[in-house]
Structures are given as structure tokens and as C-alpha cells.
Length: 318
Ligand code: FAD
Image (cartoon, rainbow, N blue to C red; front, side):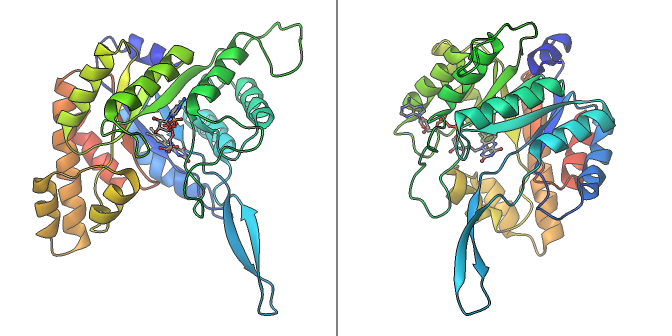
């Protein structure tokens, strides 16, 4: 079922969902199941599975030389979506990227999704590769998420990239896109970024999931501005609990988001990791209570593959 249908069927009740990351190549899927199992009691109608693009690694040739190779460290998004859908009878949302994929490869992926009965996809541009200054579109790939949304929208109309065919079974993907309450790091202003978001919705996106934020006021302002701009689709807040002290540096650095002073002070007072995790859980609970009271359609948690803190938060909210 489509994410938007789940929201409609909930009739104003806030739903619970979360995002997982495929394991590294060579690791078992069992660890993923072990982390999903405790969250199923909160009845997520859908689970997102991220996709990571290719990256360069250096392979030791054994003769003192290193060879640069391109590889994907966490493949398997679609396989995981299919296995979770089958095992838990839940909808899954594979993340589909512009970066690292030609339009043809994207089309094949979407055809696979359709055959697997996957009704939702999250359309994202992806980030620059680690050794690149800025995002470089893949040769023959989509440049912006809005282009990818257009490609998926076209497929929903039965229009494939090249062939003119007799279509008797059209795809009908519900399309999610990313939104940034504190603006995307490359965007010159929040207003410009919102214009870009509107373009994604106009191209066919059905709902938005936000980047993590730690101050709910940022989300509420973002939603108000998006509505003023004519964006009417559901805007689902993304919540990430702080789990380690390093998050105080890396989250602002990677995502260009601000952390509230009270949260920083709470983490700095902690004597060990267990205390930091607890501060992160308490903060996310307070965020979730306020967002739920405001009637958000879904509370979407970034699990980063570990679920115990999400379980503790959800047990207070759902
Ligand atoms: P876009 O919407 O294309 O925007 C990228 C930048 O380009 C923005 O600054 C925007 O303002 C600007 N822009 C857009 N259109 C135009 C235009 N026509 N002209 C000029 N500028 C323009 N990354 C992954 O690698 N894998 C994942 O699974 C993943 N999941 C995510 C899930 C969520 C909910 C979120 C919020 C992010 C996720 N990301 C993921 C990260 C995402 O790929 C990065 O944030 C990326 O840098 C931007 O992606 P986007 O889809 O928002 O890009």
C-alpha cells in the first residue's frame, strides 16, 4: 500500500516508521532482523531502506602498490526490501539515487520494484563521492532528485525511456522526497531550497520526509513556509536520537544542522556512553510528544541499524 494511503487510513492518528541501512557486504541479514523484531510491536506501516552509492577503496596489490577500485560497500537495498516485506508483511520503501546510476539502471530497478509489489520509492539525488568537492551527476544519470521524480512519474504513466510498448500493467509508485528544515547544505537559502522542494512535488512527489532536526520549531517553521509556497503533500518529520558524544561534532558537520544548547549541555554533563544515549532518548521522546500533539502524520526514526533506543522512544509514544 502507498505511504499516502496509510496516512489517509490512519485518519489523523500519528503513525510510527523507521529507516534502516543495509549491512556491509559479507555481514548477515540476521543482525538487521534482530534490530527490526523489537520495533514491530509498534506496527510500522512502512520501513525505509537506504541506498549507498559506490565509493573508492584502495586494494593492497601485495607489491607495495595500492590499486584504486570502485565498489559499493552496502549493496542489497532491494533484496532487503523484498525480504522484510515478505517476513513481516509490511510495506518497504527502497531509496533510489541519482548518483551512481544511469537512467537505464534506474528503470531496471523500478521494474524490479514493480514485480516485487513495492508501492513506494524514495527519490534522492545522493551526495558527492568522498573524494569529490561537489556532486557530479553520473554519465547518463539524473542530475537532481526532481529529474528522478520525473522519470518515476513518467514510468507511472507507462512511459519507459526508449521503447514504445503496449502496456497492460502500469506501475503506480508513491514517490517520497527529502526536505530540509534547516535547508540543504548546498542551497543558498531556505527559500531557494523550498522552491526546489516545490519543483520535486510539482514533478510528481507525493510526500516529503525531512532531514533530522533537534529543535521542533525548525520543523514547524519549515512546514508553515512550505504550505505558504503551495506544497500541500504530507511532510513527515525525521527524528534521530543522539547516541554518542561524537554526534555533537559530526551531525552539524555532515548535515549542517544546529543542535540546541540544552541538548549539548545535557550530553556534555554525561560521564559515559550509556548516559549520553539516555539523554538522546529523552530528547527524542520530548520532540516526539510535541510533534505527535501537533498532529504530524508519521514519526519517522533514523535507526542507523540499531533499534534499542528507537524501541525505548516508541514505547513512550505509541
Ligand atoms: P535535490 O533535491 O536534488 O537537491 C540537492 C541540492 O540541489 C539542493 O541544494 C537543492 O536546493 C539543489 N537543487 C535542486 N534542484 C535544483 C536545480 N534545478 N537547480 C539548481 N539547484 C537545484 N543519501 C543517500 O546516499 N542514500 C540514502 O538512502 C539517503 N536517504 C535520505 C533520506 C532522507 C529522508 C534525507 C533527508 C536524505 C537522504 N539522503 C540519502 C541524503 C541525500 O541524498 C542528500 O542530502 C543529497 O545531498 C541531496 O539529496 P536530495 O534528494 O535532497 O537532492
